Length: 273
Image (cartoon, rainbow, N blue to C red):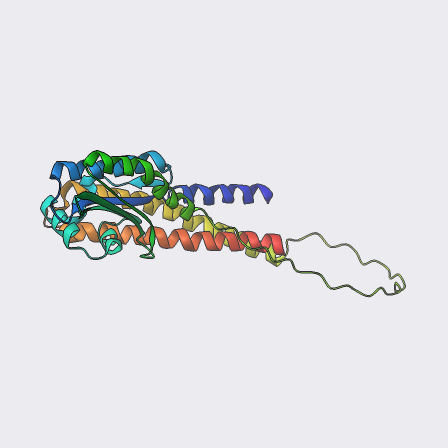
């Protein structure tokens, strides 16, 4: 039984390893046309490079410009949406990201300013930001080198599982009593697994099966997204291809969550009873 528990726990941990979260770093915007498009692109690339260097590859994926454009339709539409979007978290949902970050260039007196914000797409909350000013582009790059690393590290802290609170239940004291007269021992029956053992085993197998199906759906999600990128925009099946991506991703997430809850419940039945 212990061997089965170890195997099931290993499957659960392997399933969680497949759940890579994605961050979209949106093109840097210039509210006052203070610098060139090439300079804006370079600042965006610098932010994206910092994210790749800071975030663990097995846990986070940094979306490329091509991936973001694929979701928004075209480069022209991407630029338009990025300029007009009033909610960065909502823009992150449109590109199917878990986190989203963007830099904005402005002016203060004679200096250039930059502000970079990082949002959690799921909650819509601002996770962190930094701002600064400089007289030239080189100074803005130095600000990114200095502060962007700590900004992206917030994602690692946010993704760490919170420790569960352990509740200790004290057993009530039992009053000592005089032993009763010994009775003849009945014939020993053959040992038979308790009901709780079968219940726990059933829950564990069901949870492992659902997690296994979720791993399969994760591969289907990747295949659907690859097909979407290859032919979605030039095909009559644009909407259907995108629906397939969303449907497969939704099924994957649901089976991960439900399977993990059922698996942990089965292990809890073994431990508790």
